[in-house]
Amino acid sequence: MTGVNEVIVDGGPLTPAQVVEVAHRRARARAGPDLVRRMEPARAIVDAVVDSGEVVYGITTGFGALASTHIGREESEALQHNLIRSHASGVGAPLPDELVRAILLLRARSLAQGHSGVRPLIVERLLEMLDRDILPVIPSQGSVGASGDLAPFAHMALPIIGEGKVKLEGQYCSSGPAGVCIQIRPPRSTSPVRINMTSPGRMPVRHWS
Image 1 (cartoon, rainbow, N blue to C red):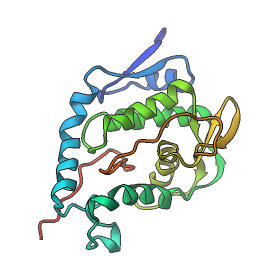
Image 2 (image 1 turned 90 degrees about the horizontal axis):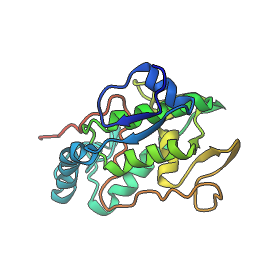
Image 3 (image 1 turned 30 degrees about the vertical axis):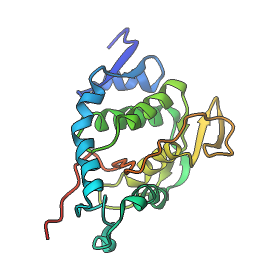
């Protein structure tokens, strides 16, 4: 696709050419006008679950062997943040800038479909990082779980919660409170950040027992 200078992220399909244009900074990615409307219904479900205390895996329970452990509202943010931290276990050289940009774009597009229950703010933060070329440092080796992408997506998500490392203007630095090169405020809420790191994003599975 020749002459593309803007790619709209609204949950709809993206062409390989659009991904390449954004990855090489020949096109800007921005949120579509219907992003919030598309994402709000699933987000409302998550908020309702947290408010009601209903048993839903990964939102009001722990993960894996801790699936039977209840997580209260006051602990839900810590649960989601700790999930990201625990999966950020990659090693090796950082992925190339073009590949990281493609990851940011495709993750924003996947979450923008409105199936995962994340806030629109998460997609907006990913697109802001793309626009400002603030790139998460994503190691090129290692993962956890069957999907194969949990570790890379966890490293991608760390800067959104004010942690991890980023690359800006060729320099690597911290994205946390002591960092000097990133000014993106991490989202804060009493309800889960709920960055679904699996691909494609899925709604949580209810436990009816």
